[in-house]
Image (cartoon, rainbow, N blue to C red; front, side, top):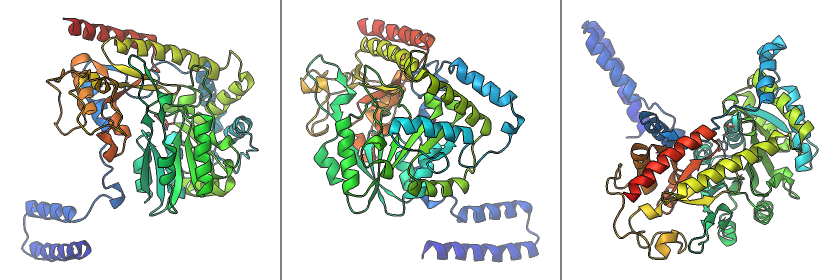
Length: 488
Ligand SMILES: Cc1ncc(COP(=O)(O)O)c(C=O)c1O
């Protein structure tokens, strides 16, 4: 019997029972029991949530809090935002009392104005604050609004792996179909450290993912979790394919100021022909080291933005005014200091690069093999030296982790007491082991992959390095203890 029919029948039987029970003055406990049956007969969750209800972050955050572990997992700074930003927030709270009230739905006017002028120059585009800008609840809100507004039932969305984990469920919730394409690492020479720039798209494979049903491609540069900064040539390839196949580009650029070693962030919307088909997403949380403010934005052409406005006005309607005012004042300050040593966008990447270098050096002391990132808050490290021999037939396109390539994998596991189920991806079990036994929290990289690819990429863990000196010292202490045990 069809589900609808079954539900109707069980409801009818229940109603019938309610009547007869009332006549017989049945006890309250029976009624309670019947009420439970009725409640259970109805499907509770919307079908769009099927398969997306497991969140790995909850599990690892909980585990981290149960042990006295140094948290290098989640992506947030554990140091204060710059003074000028904190003062801007204080002005917003204690200044004009009207900032306690609603503001314009699509963004507090001074904020949309400065976003338009600031990014207009960077993107080489005339940006209208009233037509090309939407302020959202963080970049998360921007992404959600974009997917809801533009992805339709059955549309295909190309997602580059590894990917910030919400892209897949957001595509599914909009009724779309995610199509994955992996960045593949090229082997390094023995002893050479890997770099996230070695992780590249295969142009033929990427092209093969575009079909007549492809609606959008999601780009994230600098990328979370790899820290890869897409080069101009890579962006041009993506741009060419998007234009050839009339595909939109949703580009998540929340780490755009966090670029190291002289690398340059390039916005794909600044490439010829791309503004008209691109939504560029940013985050004040990442920009001003204030992730709790949850102010994000989307910039794009009017023909796309008008649909995002529709979603926004029928869901969130408007974002907190004071946080928007603080971001507006902070961006105005940055515009005045742009490119100068006093600019936070110059100072922050320098400081964060020092933390990156510190952490990269430190984790190598216990045999973790970092993949050097060009940008973002994160790097991944290869943990294959800790595992059993790389299973035959695994790896991508003949690629093997460095040790396995040279036959240097230990013959038996160095990790006899790995927690977790045997069929759980290795990196998850390794992270649980590391939290419990070594007091360090990282995130398993397989959570940033689609299910079929997880088994190929379960030998990496992600560390977050946007951390204060005291956290780095605490990490070093744990790593020294780990190293001593290895030597023992
Ligand atoms: C790639 C990426 N996009 C978006 C976000 C969400 O940003 P926000 O905190 O502004 O919502 C994050 C946060 O970790 C991220 O890493």
